[in-house]
Image (cartoon, rainbow, N blue to C red; front, side, top):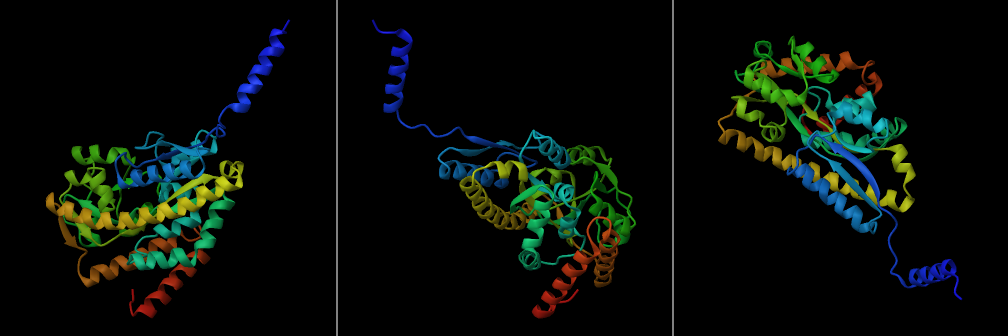
Length: 340
């Protein structure tokens, strides 16, 4: 008589031997971002996810939380450190939560063009990547927000004009705080999710953003003017905790990192194109683009930027790093025949 247990084990073994091979269980990377669903940012992030799933045979993928579902940058970074999340698409505020040195990229009135931004990223690439890693994160790719401008309900050209508006300050952002302090502005600190309502109620009548962000967040429906002088180039990045990254097999690390760099480079390129297109959208919606004052006003802004950057040296980022970045930019401009 057949023993039922032994017979069951034998049947199971035979069936298993003839069954098709099933891939190992998917390793999910829990990822959060401020970006709303449907934006180019999210479309490229979804493509990134699909590609790593395909190349890994389903062993690796993202679980994505868009549209501030997990909170703002500082909330997300806290959740990553607690192990509740693994990865994020962050702005300069989140980057600064990892390392103050990296916020030199957001310093006020530092850059004049995307060529300058690209030059500094290339020149300091290894140093910046090491800065992420020594603070517990791996950089999967830079995801630039773009040049940031002042949007307001009263014309703003000069520093004096700036002091006459009720300006928003992203709560907890030392870069913006230093910039406005140097301008003599007393901004109103608010969460980013409160800006639209505050513009509607009149609590504030001015805010700063990239043109694409102003349109995407609908701020452009509550302002009349955009000052055509960039306050700064706002950086962004996609990062993963080093702990999570190190837990992945080497082949999955390679797939994740290689595709991250590729897709985020695509995102930066498209963001720059869409920021230019967004200015046309602003115009069509009645937002007037006004110049950043006279040559004397612009010279004043440059000096204000220098004062703000210097004030942050030694407290947010190192003076040595700021000096090296500013010198690299000065050399780059000299070669191109530019000046500042």
